[in-house]
Length: 85
Image 1: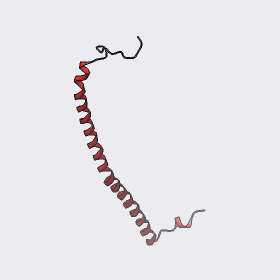
Image 2 (image 1 turned 90 degrees about the horizontal axis):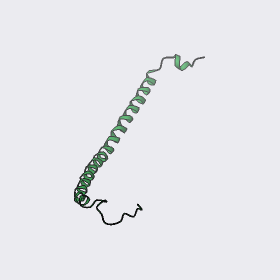
Image 3 (image 1 turned 120 degrees about the horizontal axis):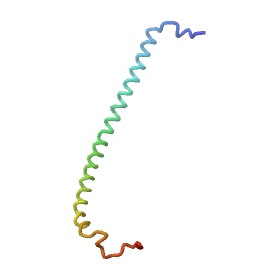
Image 4 (image 1 turned 60 degrees about the horizontal axis):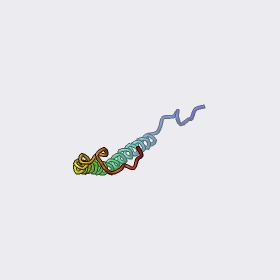
């Protein structure tokens, strides 16, 4: 029928072992989360910094190319586009 172990009250030693397992599991999860944060936060900061540099670089390139695109548009160009009419 039932397991005799489930019916009998657990001994103080078994309770201590269960508490030790629970503490070990909890500390492992907390330690893993701390390690992940310790390793990933600098990577995240680096990516954000590089994204801002890239946006600044793109804005500079657009600023430099803006006068060229206004001077010569495809309709004003005397060169053939290579497409048949």
